Each structure stands twice: as structure tokens, then as C-alpha cells.
Amino acid sequence: MRKHTSTLWGVIGAIVFVIYNAIVFIAAGFTGHTATFWTAWAFMNVGMMAAAVVLVILGKRLSIRDWLFGFPVAWHTTAYLIIGLTTSTLFIVFERLVSWKLALPVQLAELAVYCVFAISCFIGKEKIDEIQDKVKDKTAFIKLLRVDVEMLVGKCSDAETSEMLKSLAEKVRYSDPMSAEALFELEKEISFAVTECDEALVTGDYELAQEKCRRAEMLLSERNKKCKALK
View 1: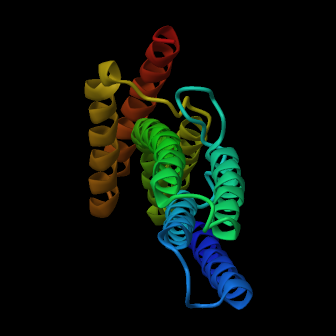
View 2: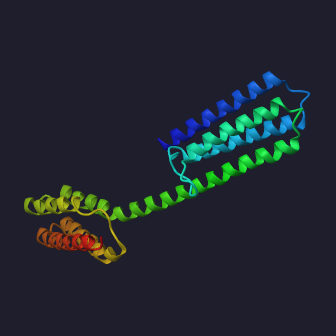
């Protein structure tokens, strides 16, 4: 979905780029222009490409806000394109009345301001990605543990042991998904108990498998209590 959105923005940007240039040269022609015209034309094209790059990279995250005023990147992009188009159009229309020495700094300033806000939005994106990665890491243990226990249920042929494993799987399912560094050793013991239970099932030692299942359940209960205490 993210790739599809980025591709869509890229296509829209290319269409706008082509339409803008077609309108400019159909209306003004290709020859007889001053440096002001070419400066305005060049900066508008660079601006559109910069905006397209920002939209393609951010994709669906156009609501990410800058660090200075809190406006979303979509707002900055829209405002820049409107202001840039207006400015470049005025310079193109009045190319013989306005020096390129005025057109250059004005449009350079517009582009620079947009880039500053766009970069600040990218910084916000990196922070969001970092937080999401941390959340994924902290919730990975319970997700993987649930899969491991459910696999044990599937491979167990002993009715009593199977019921114990189903009970464990249910408790894992309703365990707090968020982990913490303080729980690392305890979670490692839980994983080890589940692994030992798996090995016992492979050898058909259901008594040992039940013992390891009870240990895993006890450790899981301790883990959940400590997890709650850490909040």
C-alpha cells in the first residue's frame, strides 16, 4: 500500500510537470525570452521536482508535522506550490520589466524555506519510525511466544498435556504485549521452558512436558505481574 501511494504521487507529479511546461511554452513560445523568464521557469520546475520527491518519500505520511509551527508537510507543499506558481507566473509575464537579479533571490528564498520545513518533517518521520521500531521490538516476544506454544499444541498427541498447553496458549494470548529490558532474563527463562517442553514432546516424555509447561506458565504469570508493576 505504501509503495502504491508513493508511485501514485510520482505519477501525479510527472503529469503536473508536463502540463505546466506545456502551458508555459504554448503561451510564451520557446524563443526571445530574458534571463528572468528562464530563472522563473527553472525554479518552478526545480520546486515541483522537490515537492514530488517529498511526497513520494513520505507516501501516506503527509500528516507529519514540522518542528517549528506544527503544520503538516502536505500543507507546506501545497502552500509552496501555490506561492511558487504565482511568483514564477508573474516573473514570466513581466519578464521584460523585472530583472533576473530580483527573480533569483525571491524564488531561491521560497525554495529554501520550503526545504527547511520539509527537512524538519523528515526528522519527525525518523522519530516516528524509531518509536515504531521500538514498539515492534517490545511486542515481539509475546507474539513469537504465542506462535511457539500454539505449535506445541498442534504437535501434542496426549490429551492431558494438550489441555495444559492450550491453557498456556490462552494465557500468553491475554498477556501484556509490551516488554521491557528489566524483563529480559525472565522472558529468556520462559522461552527456554517452552523449548524444553518441545523437546520433551518430541521424545514422548509427556510428564516432563507437563512439568515444563507448568514452569512456563508460572514464569509467565511472574512476568506479567512485573510488567504491570513497571508501568
